[in-house]
Image (cartoon, rainbow over all chains, first blue to last red; front, side, top):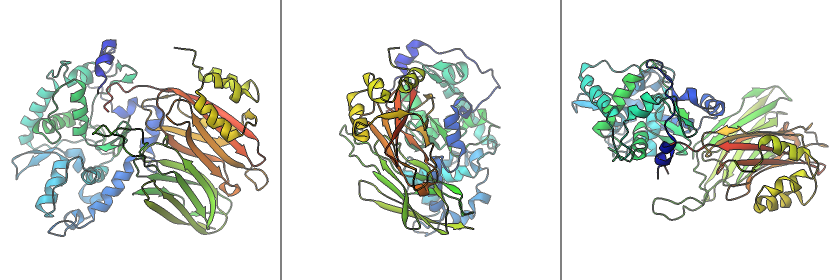
Length: 252
Length: 105
Length: 150
């Protein structure tokens, strides 16, 4: 169950952040959690990055090829990729997120069985690829064909949904910086997904977070990998443009 | 089971060295219900040991209150060049060990 | 708030005397923890001091609370810290972790992350090579996540 209802009765706190005054959720965490993220030897998300590094060089599928067989050293080939996604997928003639792209590579080029979006292996690979953009500014793909997707995402962000009749923007634009019970409401910038979430005791992607938010407002979730979530992700990444990628991020 | 070990490679004799380890493990408490409403069986790492040159220098008895994907940091006094071994077994019987050579100058 | 002791009052209680840990806070702590502490101490007196327990005063999630403990000791063959036990008041089990040191540890200090089911006191008791017992206590406030999913 989600506890937003009772908490909302207490009321959304005062809005703090002015437009343009953008801030990663990292900034509002306590010093201990920031330290957990900052220390590579202590950041639990690095366990997934380490697993992803092993998967990157492991041959898979009918083609018996690894990611590295085509892409070589990820530090070279994948630098900046996560900072740019979602991107345009020529084959599918539509937008695609990084997790979807890794999944497609696997089935099309490695001839391997598809991985579930929330499978440990796919999350680990996405974490490893995203790690290659650690500290780089979010720089959305300039392909003009993505404009319509971002517009759709912006509309979703501003649409009230669910039994609580709340839009993402109600909390993450209008009330960001205020208090929801004891927690400070973040601006909702996807600077560090996949992310190690203490609540999950593990790592998960942005779409998993969307699922939680949607059940939080008592709305029917769209589902991980849905066109709605990809559109929302594309809009949020453009909204976060310039903020540094945190890979792997740690959040409560 | 992935583990990340952080320990200096080369130190001078007498240095007190910090060992950091992160272990990929759910540390199932046995108190949690799964999606089907039944209790998920307990599976934690009940004991962790560190040997240095074959001799135990540190040991931890661990209970379900230690967080998932456990992190431990502790110290040892570098005396001679020897292997530092980290050993643990979870309650499902999965054994794991990591070894690093500590060179003492 | 109820009469639950703050970190300051808990410290004051522990500082009140060598038997403080067994007597004063026991009034505010569940019996199970007291039983576990008694089993560890064998009923011997627990002195406040020599132990530094570093736990954040306020955490955003109780699933992984950073905990650092260290004990003043020369860590020689003749005088060292044998064991540090960490206890909590409100989890299903009173034990958290027991750290066993040797003179070759060089320093009686360790760090880990613990689960805390709600705001509570965390206790650390060290057993020295001469059998004496020393302690520290820390009060942790665990805030509820605003939109916790479970």
